Image 1 (cartoon, rainbow, N blue to C red):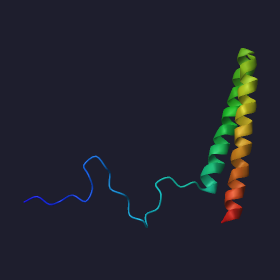
Image 2 (cartoon, helix red, strand yellow):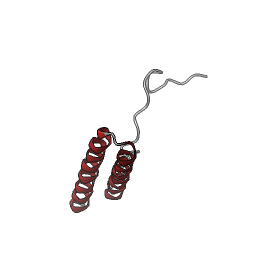
Image 3 (spheres, rainbow, N blue to C red):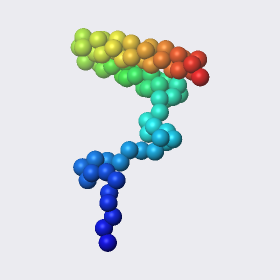
Image 4 (cartoon, one colour):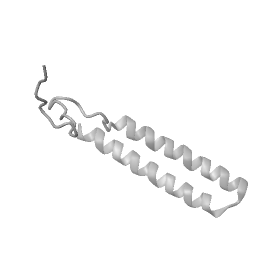
Length: 81
């Protein structure tokens, strides 16, 4: 006996309305990402000192800027709740 499917075979069924999203952005998670970017900035400085390449300085500044943005975002998320 076959039953009629509620959706077409090529469509995925919609998730229930009350479910939480799979990926939640939390203040702690964003702060942790900022900390990892800060560690990457330190590593870029270390590599730049050893190899004497100017690219490492630019990478370090970019990682530091990303860490700053993540920290500000984490504080904003925390204040919103």
